[in-house]
Length: 392
Ligand SMILES: Cc1ncc(COP(=O)(O)O)c(C=O)c1O
Image (cartoon, rainbow, N blue to C red; front, side, top):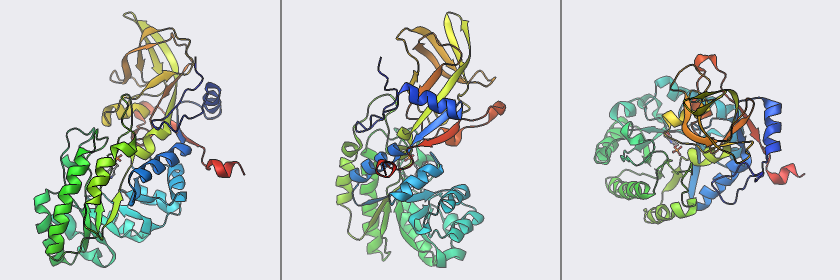
């Protein structure tokens, strides 16, 4: 049996954690845990930077709004994508330069806009006349990207269902902004999270190219294109490496007119592979020929992404003698929906055994609840300093 419990989607990253290392983390920090490996954050950031040269990566905080991730990316010269006052607060406390941040929630209260401006953010997103109107009183200290919708049912979360204007409405919104004195500096889109192919990114970039050319011809000086997030990670079925995934996106970007700053808002791709869930069997029962193993983390906790994010994480037992019994993995709450895996083959686990969930950094701990007063998993960071510094 291999002692290598964890690895990551990136083949360069065979994270050298062994069983003893993970047991030591549990002994020190308790259970359940979500372990964030900052080395993997670094590697994912570098991989996407190399796959999208010339594109500034604004890490979208929502999948994993943790200080260790912000510090790691700040040290690499990364940029940030904020959507709420809590996220503004987090980057402010981390000493991030507000000029490296954009605020991309398409629907905001005036108090949200004020808070971000007070911090020093200048670039916001709007997708409709009312939202543009909110910037009239802030027009001296703000600029806006128009968010365009590109529906994508193939994505795990089709974000254009909820946000974005139709491409055909862009000229009218640009004209309205001009009348209002609100400065629109570019376009943005999000083709949906965990999008399985680059096709929709390419279509959206091509469509924005036409919109930008037409807008410039009408006298609007657009200088930014924000291609959003959506870059996928491997949960179960392997995906092509990100450099290969992004090849058609690079080709589409190369056809854009000159004088554009290109930015992206990756969240999942940076955070997902960096997170590992560790939970403990707290009870077991044999029901109808299947072993039910009850964990101290579940669907209302770190595994909520199986509900909200349509993800299906790879789960392995930390102690594995190779034997198998038909099993069910259940969460700790009293709710019957709280089942992490209905049909799984596992060794006959004992109370105290540990389960390891991989690629669980994105949309897991950030959307966990305290339902039933069950304490959510503690999030801890490892490898906070890059290898070069830790060796010193
Ligand atoms: C505006 C915006 N930007 C970026 C992201 C991050 O997307 P992803 O995690 O797919 O990279 C999201 C996710 O909801 C979003 O709403």
